Image (cartoon, rainbow, N blue to C red; front, side, top):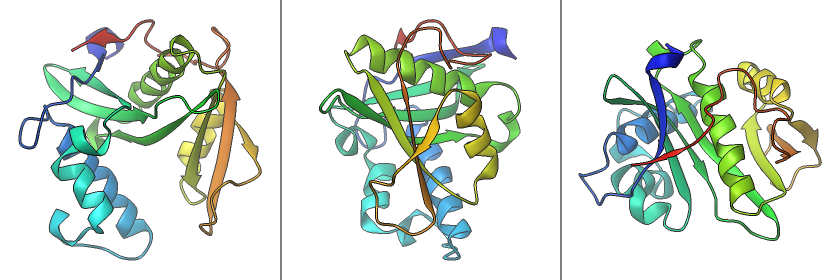
Length: 181
């Protein structure tokens, strides 16, 4: 699998021209809402903020970097790295299609996100993850993240961060360079 995986920076197409990013974000948000106990039937039932990300990710993440894992020409995972702010960036919306899990896609995306943040002059990356996503928390810990005091008031959210020092915490399966799409 690793030889077939490329991680690219999404160029930011408009609505209906997202190269699969909207589909990946839909999977992320629909799953998250179900895990919160608020199962929704489709994208139209998502809260407006999340629906906007799915329908027009280019507008929703303007100024941020959207990294996409591609295998066999199809988008199979994504992650958003926010624009630098005060020496920090945030990793958001990490998602791997269920049939591609366990193949290094998520660790590759996180590694590429850290590298992107470092290249942007960021010294610290942070993220938040729901406490019930124990597999994700374990992945982040393996990649060098540590739990820190919460900056978010939502209940059951775990906040984590790590430095962007090259070679520390990128993890096995990380992609060395992000290609431009």
